[in-house]
Length: 77
Image (cartoon, helix red, strand yellow):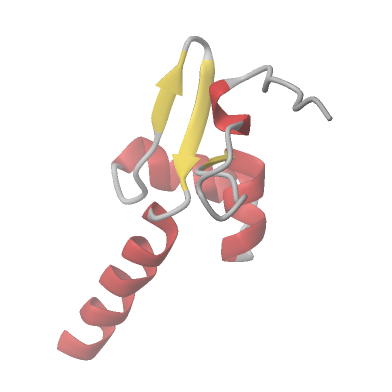
C-alpha cells in the first residue's frame, strides 16, 4: 500500500491524522462565521494565519486560542 504525497503543505496531517492547517473557508466554517469576517479577523491580527507561497492558511490551534480570548474579554467586561 502506498501513501499519496500531499500536494500542499496544509494537506499534511498531524500524528492523529487531522490537518494542522485550514483554509480560510474551513476556519470560517468551524467558527460558524462568514469568509469575509474571517479574512477581517486575520487582517486585524485577531486570528492567526500563515502564508505558504500565495496560500493563506489558519493553524488549527489558532481557533481555540481565538475563542479563549473572546471568552476572556467577555468575562472581563
